[in-house]
Structure formats: structure tokens, C-alpha cells
Amino acid sequence: MKQLNIFCEGPTEQGFCTQVLQPQLFPHGDGLIHTLAVGEKNHHHLYGIGRRTKYGRVRKFIRNTIKDREAKNVYFTTLFDLYALPTDFPGKDANERNPANPTPYVLALEEAFRQDINYHRFIPYLQLHEYETMLFADPEAFGKSFENIKDEIQQLKAIAASEPSIEHINDGKTTAPSKRIIEVIPEYHGRKASAGPDIAAFIGLATIRAKCPHVNSWLIQLESLEWG
Image (cartoon, rainbow, N blue to C red):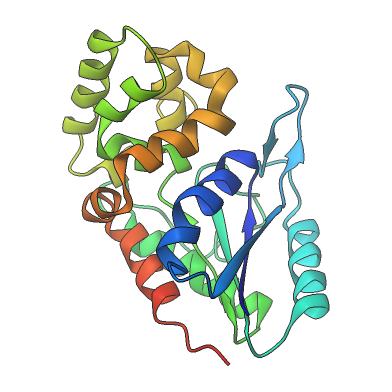
């Protein structure tokens, strides 16, 4: 059976992979997604890869997993936020992010990541700029997980409309996608692991792909894998 291993920051991304990606990539049940949480727990007991995380630890975990699981029908990819990557992440020193056009920067880091892991069935992916970017594709979907938030939904729509695209919502400590959502809907903070994947499922991958070109390019790669 086909097997796609996805290294994730934590449970929110893991939920997205199993709830949303699994039926998209393997609609006939001929493959499985296995998620592996790479992030560390902080004092709030939440997973995440942060600036204090050493990339070497992440790299060792990925390479050891590849060594244990490599086979002709097995691929590996990642779902890491560009926001707050480890300071020693491949490519960070050699490239500079342009807020007006962040895509070249994330592509450069992904390529440096690919070269560092150096395995032909490894597809690196970094989310611009956080998982929650995808949820701005249709803020109305927040109404499926939270009650009485008509005004809050309008605020989220205004945030999305204020940028050239939702992938431009930046990586500031108070203005990153998740920070903006939590400011508008504080309850999201304690329910990220369940609400995050549920909202993405309500939105649907077709809408997410249309609003997030970088997500779409990743999914095209995954849909085009040559198995066996």
C-alpha cells in the first residue's frame, strides 16, 4: 500500500492531514497518510517548532524516520510553518524575505531543506506563513465551529481583504495568521487542534487551493508522485 509520511508541527496539522488530505490524495483507499509530530511541547503543553528549537534535532528525527521506513512505495513530506522557524534552518542566512513577495523566500528555504535532507522521496513544504493562513480562505467556515460570531467573521474577512492575498498575512509576533484569529476569536486558542482541521474541512481543498497558490503547488507535487 502507498504510504505518505508527513512531518508536522503538532496536532492541528496532523488533524488537517488525516481529515482533509487523506481523502484527497487516496480517495480509493489505496494509500495511507502517517503523521509524525516533530514539534516540542512548551509550557502551554502545545506542540510547535519555534526559534528556540534546534534544526539539528528536527533533521535527526526526519533522517532517522526515513532510514526506518524507506521503501519503494513510501514518500515523505513536511507541514511546517514558515513563521518562527528555527534560527539555524537551512537557507535562512543566505536568503531574505520580501514581505511584498514572500514566495521566492519560502521556495529558497524549501530547496535548501531538500538538499540538506538529501533523499529522493522527500518533498519539503513550508506553509506561508502559518497553518491558519488556509483558514482565511473562507472565514464564514468559522461559524461551523464557533457560535454567535457574525461580527467576528466580518473582522476576519476584513483582515483577508487587507492583503494582496491571504498568503501575504505576515509572520509578526502579533500579526501572524493565528495571532489575528485569536485576537478576534479568543476561543480558537484553546481549540486549535480540533477547530483548525474542522474549519479547513468545511472550507474544502478546492477553495484553499484557489486562495493559496503555494498550498496548491505542494498538493500538485503530492498528486503527481510516482509510486512503486
